[in-house]
Length: 59
Image (tube, rainbow, N blue to C red; front, side, top):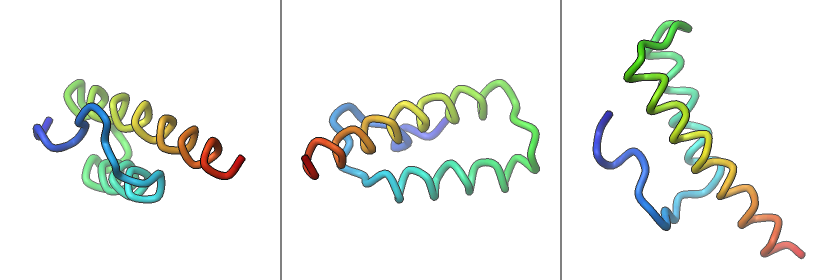
């Protein structure tokens, strides 16, 4: 996984992270290797945090 995929306190929006997730699936052809699965899991955690942040800001 590339080192810039997930950084603590990431400021990427949920849309940006979602685009990375989509790109990962496209590159993988719909079947993730162990390394791609680890990247996917980190991206999903980052996406969820970004969604929570958006909800808190909207409240």
